[in-house]
Amino acid sequence: MSKLRITEIFHSLQGESATVGWRTVFVRLTGCPLRCGYCDTTYAFKGGEWFDIADIVARVATFEAHYVTVTGGEPLAQSNCLGLLTALCDAGYHVSLETSGAIDIAPVDRRVVRVMDLKTPGSGEEARNRYDNIESLLSHDQVKFVITDEADYQWSREQLRTHQLDARCEVLFSPAEGMLRPSELAGWILRDRLNVRFQLQLHKILWGNEPGR
Ligand code: SF4
Image (cartoon, rainbow, N blue to C red; front, side, top):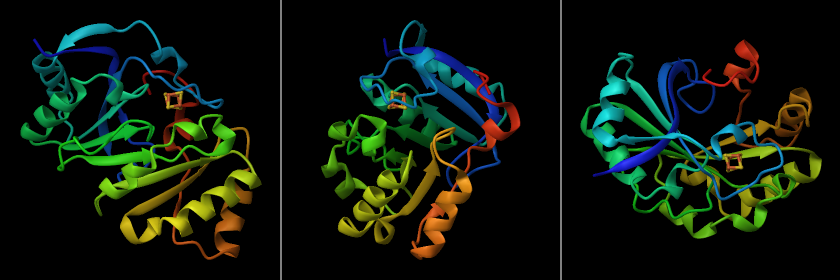
């Protein structure tokens, strides 16, 4: 049986990435091997319930949405996540995966949009970045930086340049909530003329940090 440990399956508006604002079903897998200082989903580290892949796909269908995001925790920490992603693609959804960048993304179904973090020094988990993942990125994927301060911004700008990330795919710069004023980050991006997409988390503006939103 292909089972996965799931923290929650819920329906909301996509708060981040290129599909922001679309009605989306979120499948949140339990567990994460990282401990980022700003993590807002620590409730997904433990617990959860076991579901068969077929049951997850059936539950997703009840929401009648076109978009599905598989998130965590770190979804790829459960090997059966790969089968779930393929099953959701086969069912006809636009599927995205939110991943920390610490686990190999190459085996993920190529139909999936991979939204991959590069962890900044301010996250406390920079050492977990798997830079060879960059070679696996396709043009429909996205690389995301959550930026906590000016030093993180400078580090992210350097990664952008060194790996020519904006030539590979869309790059997202997001201020860490409560740590960096959004207007400050916006000003730096404009000053330095970076070809990145600034983003605020729509779901937090609408609902704060409520789980299941
Ligand atoms: S990778 Fe994501 S879920 Fe894991 S600790 Fe970092 S922010 Fe939290």
